Image (tube, rainbow, N blue to C red; front, side, top):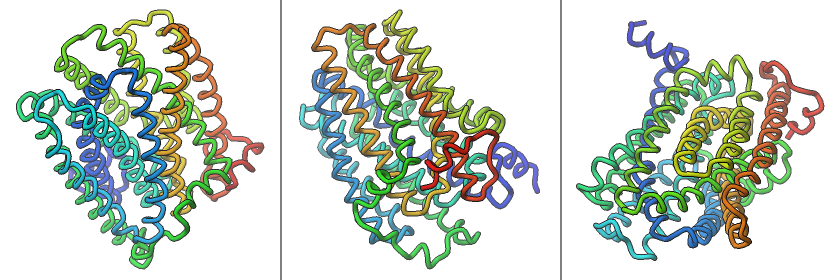
Length: 442
């Protein structure tokens, strides 16, 4: 083994035969999130242009788009072989971006209709494309591999999330929003190449038999919804994600109120959003490469899942006591970095032992409908509380027990995951309880 290969093996925690796959997975996630984060500051500026009062409607439209897309994806997955499903879907996203590059106005200000459509599309694309990525990872890696490799693979996404806002901050005033949309499309083309390379590796290593890859997943268009409703294990993941969505959306609404009150210039706000993304992702990448693998191996899945909910309890209490923009920015940076570096890769290991159809269909339901359902519900709750005259500090205090519920759900889910691994014949982590074995049996 040459010195460079030895260094990469140590860095990725991959076995020698897994190294090529881990590097392509890194490249895939890098390209995907770079493409999204090029668009994210533009999307956030359009949210400011729409205004806080209009955000609830935007969140509702995102949820509606997810409800429409989920059965469409289920029908496609039932009929199109996995070998072609993901490349075709990502090619469709590229075509969408080419259309946006034509209809967007070259300047910062957009028409209300275009701003709303772009916001909804970017939000839906992010959830859908990232869900497909992790479904693909669960399809080609088992749980043991996931715990070793997901930290490094997630760091690829974080590196892309660093590149995206950096490019936007540097280039948006030069090439405009149309040019940045084309940059995003180019990144997605790279992602398609990575998908093809990973499929080739899986087939070459006997992980994906050609006959299986040429077969569709089968089932009905709504099979993923039925799987979720029948499985206590999947419902536990839904609860975890729903609580996360509620708290994230609260902070997002608080941001749309505090940021324009403190910063009045549109370009300056876009730059702030891009720089915050930059800081978040530098911190996240350091944690992913140097901390996640050791944390989940030593502390276990349960403690890893519960870490960020515990931090959220403290963070919301601090923000309630000091509800100003600097406090929100610091809390937001810590929360988002922890989500990307700790909660997200830990949560994704829960899907590796599922059957193939659930890895794609049920997971897609959870990552899209449940996630956006939480966003939409929280937007309605936020607007209702604001209409009732509830202050921002009071709403932050209300978020504390939600964070406590999230923490309790994380602990229960981690124990259920351990029981499910034992039922699948995999080496169990320390801890776990027989009382949760039945809930993990589906």
